[in-house]
Figure 1: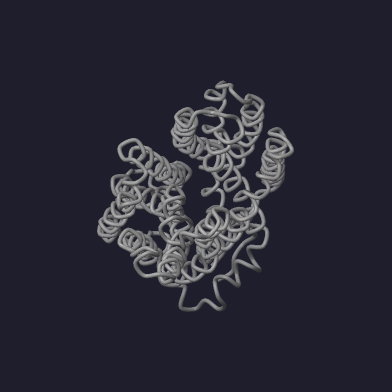
Figure 2: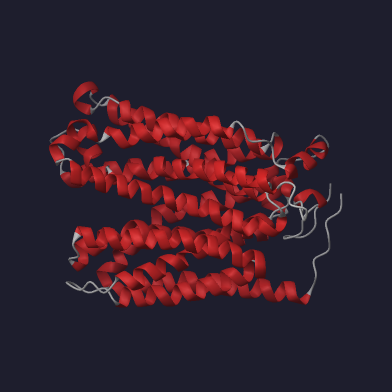
Length: 445
């Protein structure tokens, strides 16, 4: 099979459904997939909300606090570093054996370790085996999320009609944000209902046990799904395929991979900075009350959920390049307003924080942009390579960059984020002009 240039697809790449005959089934697929995605991201991120408790319980009592914090966040980062390898292995089987099996496996590999963390003995009970076991479970979770996120985008994109692909991917992105919000709210509820001694005494296990149990139930729901129509149309030609899907992604998909990494830079930088880092910075650097910081963050996540779906709808109506260009430009302006409003003792950040959160939702158009860049035969490998490698780099580099820039000044952080937005605006405008000058030739079988 021969493939066209980047952005072109084979005839089996997507299906249309003007009659709506598959609409009800596509809605069920989207519902099951989104529920599993929310649980998966909840299970992956809940660790960081209980980092202090885990540090006290899983490391020796006498070590300096800074060393304990470093070790705990090292465990959290290990999950991100495991993403590329796990994602590429799972993507290979997703391209060769089918999307459904990998989609179920990724959720199982997240739910089971989360449940195990909730049952894990502490350092006081089993000594150094406790942090080693915790590290192993976090690595498995990293493998799982490396396959889940690109796999979820591809699974829903290949199930829904082509003219609904952007909205479907936007809903999946919104579900991931919902998982973060649920983790934050459960942590707040536990913090308000129990004192610290009670949390350390065993209450900290509850969110892990809940995530694990509900994750396993979601696995049973996913088993009711069927393989994507795109893969079923493609599977007949796979027996004659030569070469690994990853190899094709590195050769035929070089431009697509590079552009997808830039889009992941936008996604990772803003999720990490605005959603995960900024609430702590509001309290530590700008003397905001914890309740105010949490309220601002919760509003931003709620707006992010809405923004992700809106970005997907704009992508369906006007194209992903227009959605990304306009959304990134608005995001750059809003985050400048947000950081300019931050000052010690001031509480003027709620509106700009919420509006910035809404435009962080432009990342809801990123998955559909990635899907349309890669042909179906190596789509899973291509997206997994670009997304997981770029996200792993950003996950390690962004906290260091943002912390250093905060020491210079809040507008230095804003300038960095503005640079990210400008890169996506430039990329989207360039691709939009290129598509306007020439109509891509259809790929042939």
